[in-house]
Length: 543
Image (cartoon, rainbow, N blue to C red; front, side):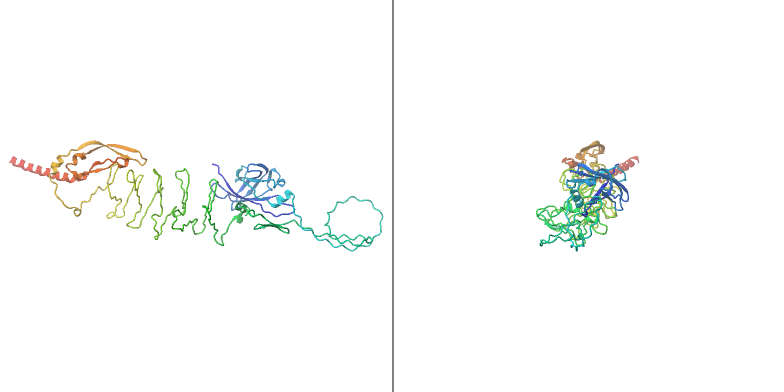
């Protein structure tokens, strides 16, 4: 699989102005791999091109470099000092822009280059521009030397042979014009004076507010609104390393939002696998903190949203590689909030308010007897309104730490089971005498039992799956018919909307078979008494 390497590059465009400008520009790049790790102490190959007109314009110069990154992943080259591919760096007319810099790299040190990016050169070194354009500002003129005294007239020697024409010397500075004196006799030629010191054209530009000044020269006032750089230009001119670093050792850097502006700071990135804002804490402290101090504020202190179509993606991801929690919610004891973590699902079908996945997907604990470890609530009046829903090998699993006083699961109303119920320890009903009153024996139990009819039948039930599908199930059973049982034992028959979750609100009759047990006990006792009486009569007949 191909890896994409990320270059964070800077071009050092500052320089001094000399009579002869160096035809080079410093270029630095920080190399990172697809995992956002630095490529350190490694050979890298680079191709650098200067484009004219646009980011896809004509290549006026191209060269290649082979260099080695340092321990911080920083690679440094000099544009104009590499292996020439095309063009002539010294003949680039920087005034005929705009120009763009295209960088390509091979992190393995070869020539299989990948395009890292193209950026506009918003600033060109003054020395290169000045040399190429041919303009220069002359230095101040040296002082006129004093005229030396006239020497004596020498004797005229013989005429020598005419020598070759010598090179024309540099023209000396023009001396100041003196007052016109009276016309006198012509004096003898004086000795040539010593030339004055030549001026220098090494000057410095500086700007303070709207005033632009050149050393040993004049100052100009820039028009209002054009006296400074944009933030992007200031960033580019900061240079590499500490040139683009803010050290807040004199207080915090503040951005104060005012007027009708609704966003104080906006960071945009279109780079794949990039991070718009990175807060890195190397000591003890908080990487990112948001505070809302207005009691009337109805907005969250932190809000994140995503339009990702990935089912398992999230607007906020908490990741802990140590021993703590990925995401933690907390309410102080003095606050009135209802939840440390709140999940809200606004969809009308499907989805979850809170979703947990893992060895233990969601764990809730409470240290108070009146509290809840996990609490689920559904205020829907009808339908499949589920307060808590479990799916798995054990859909819901409960366990108690006190088998005498506690409950593994406790329900305050009827329990619906769409399937059979299995009890390894048996089903136990409350039967303490202290809970009962009006205790009377069952009369004519055998007679009542003989009025019942046991049947074998096929029963069909229906249920609603979480997906919304209605499922019907049929199975063979033995039992009684509720309508036949109700006139004899009405206490054993109840009406219940068994299939309300499927949208069927019909009341169906149910039978409490456990209550038949004591009736059967008394019926057996009555039958046994009749058997005993018959045995006695038979014994009398045998005598």
